[in-house]
Length: 144
Picture 1 (spheres, one colour):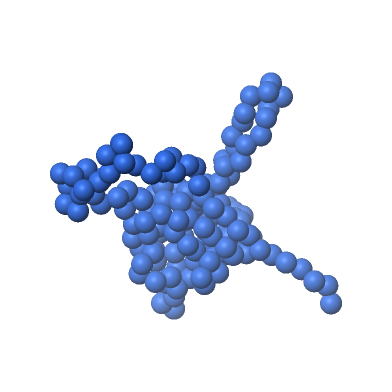
Picture 2 (cartoon, helix red, strand yellow; picture 1 turned 90 degrees about the vertical axis):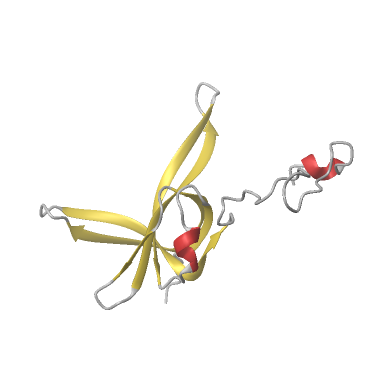
């Protein structure tokens, strides 16, 4: 028996809010697209970014994802690649490639509020008492 593997892992940003619907047999289906970007140096020596869009389909997600899968949010998706065809309303056969997300293969990488803190570090905000520039930790501006 031959061994094969169909696995994909992506980190990207949602292109639009996820679409949630139910099949005729009442199975919850969530679909969305995410963009991944990679870069390379072009022939002229300038940096070129290339964005690829990926269609993602997930089954039986919890209600949490209705708020978490919003346009622009960064997420991690793990699943398998699937190709299928269908006939559109004009009778034209179409082909689509999708990532079928695993049951626990979607992880939002930002909070529901786009990663923004509820309060700033100023003393005038509730829960304030933030640090002044003189007392900030010197490690605060490290990139890791």
